[in-house]
Amino acid sequence: MGFLDFLKGKPKATANIAKERLRIIVAQERSARGGPDYLPLLRRELLEVIRKYVNVDVDAVKVDLVKEGEHDVLDISVALPEGEARAGNPD
Image 1 (tube, helix red, strand yellow):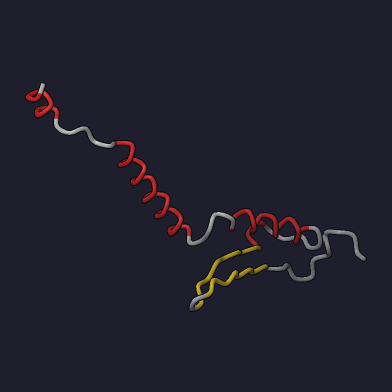
Image 2: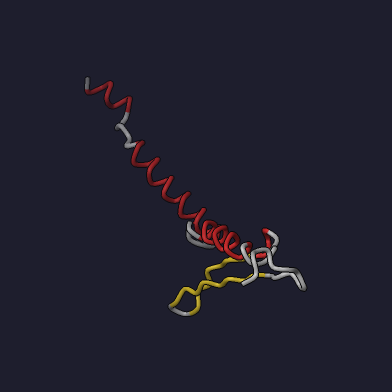
């Protein structure tokens, strides 16, 4: 069987190779998006809270993670409409 083993070559650890490739792809996707996974959920929840008080467009809330030196800074920007009445009940 030594001759047939020689022709087949060494078995490759395809599972480990696939796992490593997947890690690389996931790392690239995360860096391409520019932020952690929780930012889209945070943006959506902020939009829901803001809409209780002001009618705003879906694109009115921007949430970004900015690196400033050693620190990560959460940058939240909300474009409020001018002169629009409050969406919720006035207190």
